[in-house]
Length: 143
Length: 165
Image 1 (spheres, rainbow over the protein chains, first blue to last red):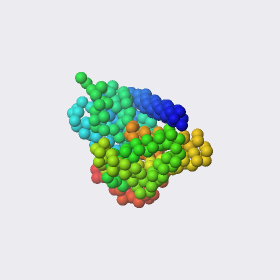
Image 2 (spheres, each protein chain N blue to C red):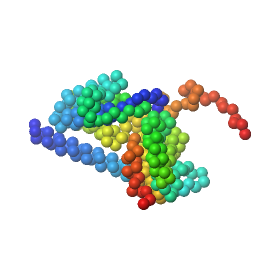
Image 3 (cartoon, rainbow over the protein chains, first blue to last red):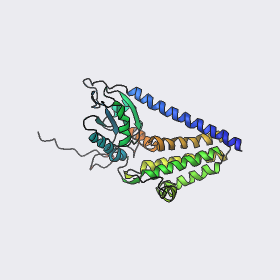
């Protein structure tokens, strides 16, 4: 029985590791897909994020309670605390469904971290705290 | 998604997820289908009563010991209840498969619950929220965006007057 349990434990670790790798690959895939935001051409929807400052793009919805009451305030607190060194753009997926499709949004809220060249660097699926956002942005802030 | 809000303790939700993960993993490692059934039943009861199934573990053990602090804010409890209910159904299905001798199917379903609960607990990804959002995108009844204020669902919004120039 002990041998069986050890074998199953090894299988469990393998499955968990595989799932973690797949999850990381999904995140990397979304980041690569989002790429660098180009300046919008006429008629092309824009997130409003402009080159020159790192920041966040927060995808949410007025119908998503966690977005309205937790994620948005966390992002706003961060913006206030960082002064003018970052930008925070909010995208309502109900108002801009094509933008949600372009970024491959699967769930709400979803928060992208972008550097000053408007290149997507990280993606967070679900709620992410003010402190974690600050930590994720720190490599892209001007010295 | 529904607009109904209420105080939701996300620490209790996370504790619930961690217990589900631990017990389900233990069921697999020690080959105890009865444990998977137990977890499924507790999750079902939790869904029925609108509370995390293993709330007692959080309120009687983890919180008093100071291992976890409450994290309460106004949230929509429905996606979390949906996620627990979905997990309960899958675990009960896993148990049924295991007792019927369909071990591969049973353990695969159990691992589905473990993975989804882990995504929620460690990555903040809410499977219930994911399903809600996808159903809203498809325009499923009850999941679509709320109609404008004063509009009865399914009816056209009242015509508004042209704004003054």
